[in-house]
Amino acid sequence: MSRITHHLEQLAAGDGDAATRLLDVVYAELRRMASAQLAREAPGHTLQPTALVHEAWLRLAGDATQDWRSRRYFFGACAEAMRRILLESARAKGRLKRGGDRERVELEDMAQDDPLATLDLIALDEALGRLAESDALKAELVKLRFFAGLTLEQAAQLLGFSAATADRHWAFARAFLYAEIQGRDGA
Image 1 (cartoon, rainbow, N blue to C red):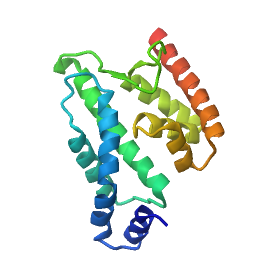
Image 2: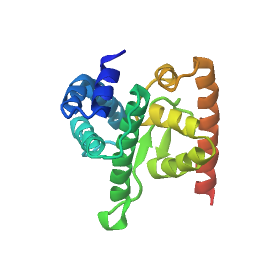
Image 3: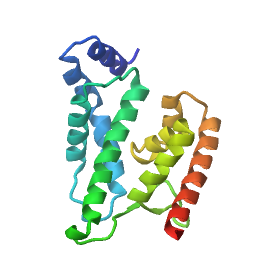
Image 4: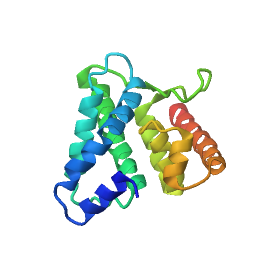
């Protein structure tokens, strides 16, 4: 059993100090995830990796309904918290009263000639919601890749399926998201 799983079990058992021990163990990984995510943001973004980790941790630690049964659920919750924070930031910057159009986000995992290479975070979130309605597992894979910065292999391991299955799911999810976003932009 990993130290993370051990601390998650202690936390679930009601050990109040387990959250502090858990943060000590995962802080560097969360900071790496935040740095990778913020590297995709447009220049001039005011949110720093440390602030993103702290904000995500505050949201996670303050969630009374948390049910982190494993590393998979914990890192999925972290990815979701970071996604929501970045989405809120993009929406705030996109409001007309704040003086701007939507913020563009580059997805480093995509090739430069890929049409998804520069993607509107709000459009991605809406398309991701539609994907989750039809296939929650593929949507979780996308969240782990885009918002947690995991490699395909790392995400496959967390989700408990083979690299070949992850590759098929990833290809489907990318095509689905592309079609959904193109449909939105064309509408």
